[in-house]
Length: 416
Ligand code: GLV
Ligand code: MN
Ligand code: MN
Image 1 (tube, rainbow, N blue to C red):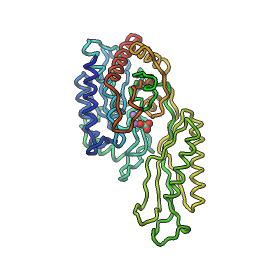
Image 2: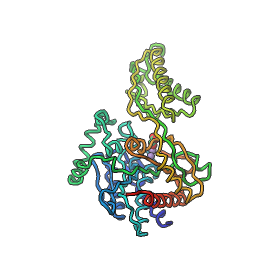
Image 3: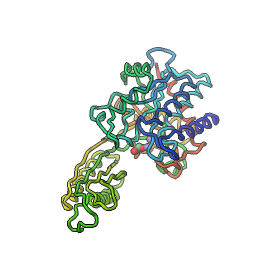
Image 4: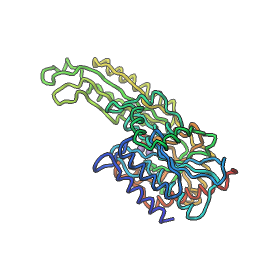
């Protein structure tokens, strides 16, 4: 199977060069690079016998029918969008590895008794609209009116972006996608392979591990408003500087998270307006991302942080407004499905380790409708959301062997 792992590396490298930005990997929801990425991944899907379609949310779907009609469908996938200045593995690995695994089974002449869909979700990172999982929500019919109204930095709404995307796509494929409402009762489950994005597997000297649960996550925007004014003539005591209020709050976020492990909280984006060296900031919009494996603890922390923001705003003569853009509870992976995956892990690397994922994954949305399992692959120095993100060829080979074993095992288990 070493040649399969080499193919996988080549595909990851090539996909990692399809970017919206020169010199670094950035591929956001429904962007021009996303269209090129879908086209390239579609050729790889077709090369292993999948029928490919794209839905109105820009998801790429490669389907392999079962030998017998009426058989259930196993879903395998992850996302094809990226963060800004991303690595090559986050998301892409979980789309490309199943394609290579299915190619391997085809070479061996193994016909699975169930249908398979390989899913390349168009949006998981929440970069363009500050709200994650738009791709998997679209695929499963969970996109709500509020999601469609979200706007990007240029004022374009999700609805407008989807309309523009579908105008550029082959209409016959879209029509067939529209006709295909999700039928979760027909699904066997959803399996996602993903880079660990953390240091645990490396510390335990294991190539892969299974995920037991995914931490809950809230994201939102906090806007501080003060009074813009002249930086040379307004005395310090008379200022209502929105940025210094925002900075004080960002430190409060860090302080709370530092003393509330395993809570993690991040202010990752800040927009200062009007944004000139000689103008006092009149408005600042900050992003906040809060995660915890326990939903109650996450909600408590969030309440506390919003209260802190109001207190800081009052003291500084500012106003502040909080807007939630995403809220997901913690998700448990399916026990029987994960047990089966752990058997495959043990068959390949002898020992299986269960991990909790601090990162969000498409499996969070899929879990609302079908049993989910996840395989994590060791990540060098735990580094992710970074161009140097790396999984070794040897580890990719282990992951590939595990998934081939899992598909074979599931075929044996499933009375279809
Ligand atoms: C996705 O990468 C996330 O956890 O933010
Ligand atoms: Mn990811
Ligand atoms: Mn990511």
